[in-house]
Amino acid sequence: MSSSTIPLRPGITNPSLWYPQRPPEAQWKRIRLAVMERDDWSCAACGHRAKKWMNTHHLEDSGDHRLENLVPLCVACHTVMHVGRSLMEKIVEVWQSEMSQVDIVRRTREGIKQGLSLAQIKKTLPLSPGPYPPESLQYANDLIRKIGTSPRAYLEEPLCAIFVNLTRWQLEE
Ligand SMILES: [Zn+2]
Ligand SMILES: [Zn+2]
Image (cartoon, rainbow, N blue to C red):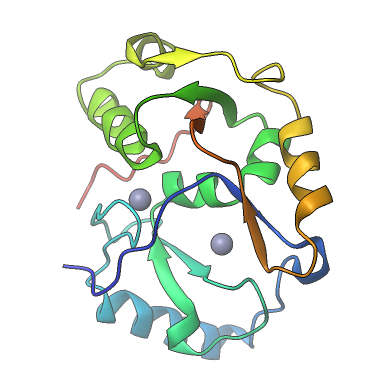
């Protein structure tokens, strides 16, 4: 099991810290492997375990590559944690939901396992419209406006990221 769990909310990284530089490739590979082995290749947000495509997320998206600042995230949870980019790439939409974000990830992955499409799964989720259209970048823009000097800012509940175009569900072990 993962040693740590982090709350899953759609969020953005402070633009002043965006895309930290990685150490040289060989060093990064060692760091990444140490993070994965420490947490048994399990997503720090939803607990999903997979060896293929697991991402490495900086808790504070600074260039701090110490192990304490790094966790494995599955592709889906990582998509949620960087919702501004995901909205731009049209991978997610933002809706209000009484279901928690982590349960939406789990429910969606379960649906994919059963062979459903993302559109079909979306219809089974309890969703209602938020203040902006579901694909609006305004959700991310509002976060950027209020982020100040914090490393990250999050959409408030009940706003959730809903998957409309994600392919890497990491169903193989
Ligand atoms: Zn996850
Ligand atoms: Zn990240």
